[in-house]
Amino acid sequence: MSRRYFMKLLFIPVGIIIGILAICIVVTPDISIKEISMTGLIMFACFLVPSLFIYIYMKKIKRED
Image (cartoon, rainbow, N blue to C red; front, top):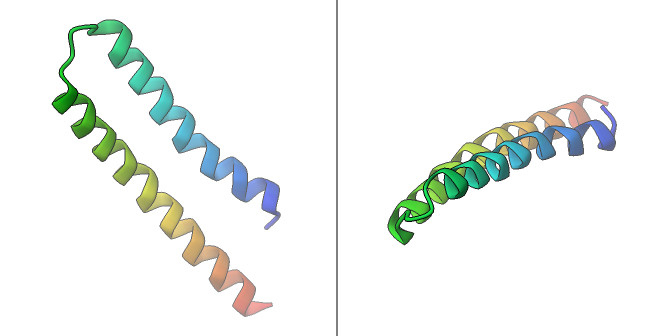
């Protein structure tokens, strides 16, 4: 698997996170800081878990070579 493909897999969740956060800010301008931080935390977890799986998968492929 190429590095470019790996970077694309990482950019997809980041793009989704930024898009959802932008929509949340536009739709609800009077949103509280607590809600933003909670949303950010959930988004970060959603990004961290897939990237962790990708990292483990990449290590497994390298070991097989």
